[in-house]
Structure formats: C-alpha cells, structure tokens
Length: 103
Image (cartoon, rainbow, N blue to C red; front, side, top):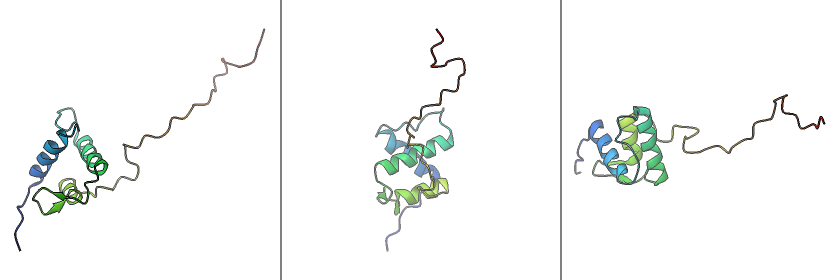
C-alpha cells in the first residue's frame, strides 16, 4: 500500500489559504481572527461541495483535512453564518409617532 505524505496542520492551512484565495475567498489577512479564517474555509469547502473530494495528495478528503486542522467536524455549526435570516420589521412602539390625526 503506497504511503501518503504526512501533512502538518501548518501545511494544510497554507494549502487552504492558497487554494481558496485563488477562488476569491479572502483568507490571508492579518485582520482575520483564527475563528474567522476557520469559518471562511468551512464555508468555501461547503459552497463548492468539496467535503468528500480528495484533498491534494494527503490521502484525506477536504472534510478530514478541515477536522485535522481545526479539531472539529466541518458540519458542526448548527446555524451557519452564511445563511442570512430574512429581515423582520420592528414593531413601531414609539408613542410620540401616532397614526392618529390630532388636527
């Protein structure tokens, strides 16, 4: 059985940054926190349907590489940030702005 290269977490993260940056995902910024970068990688993998595809020559899928890098399953979030809830109108509770005509 052929052996696969042993990728470090640093190599996996660099590969994610390079790969998804070429697809327009901003990952290489000093302003991004670790959790922001993790979330952007997760969204990129899921949006492109790569979770079950082979991740380079690692012997892992994208989901497995994500789990190895971040220590959690790619689908762990119950409510992903990329789903934006519909806008709700706030009730008008301002007593100064009444619809009544006082003239």
